[in-house]
Length: 167
Image 1: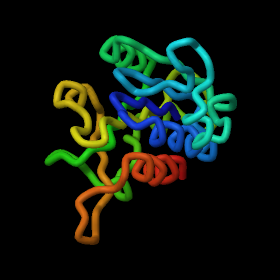
Image 2: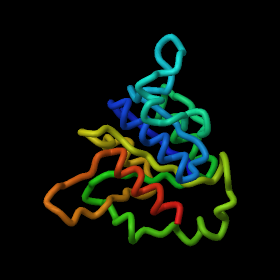
Image 3: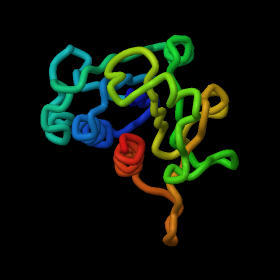
Image 4: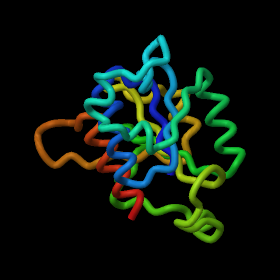
């Protein structure tokens, strides 16, 4: 599975998602927009990042992309199934979703890196994922909220989604 983080503003959230991605067995992370990377503008490790990630940026391969649209197009051309984690009228419950039959017939959990993977797109803490990027996704998933709050912290939601999708 690939984790695609777009316009996440908090370095602590991103560091936490790296740590969770490592625990969940994510094959790589793609960062885009103004999402902080593990390296500062001088290409040095960010101490605030590593404090939260505990070094997961060294165990999970990652890249930064300037052009998210082109990256999404490339992943989809390789057979990736693009999933968005977002509250939207078209969302389906994360816990009810199953990969399409044609995907299950051609892919196994052993598909480790690169082509034909599930890609989870996660967006900004406040605005989420923009409509144009949601339109590029194969499925929009959401975590059902049973309490009074309408959402989870983006890093927490990502962790719930990663482990649910890896089952």
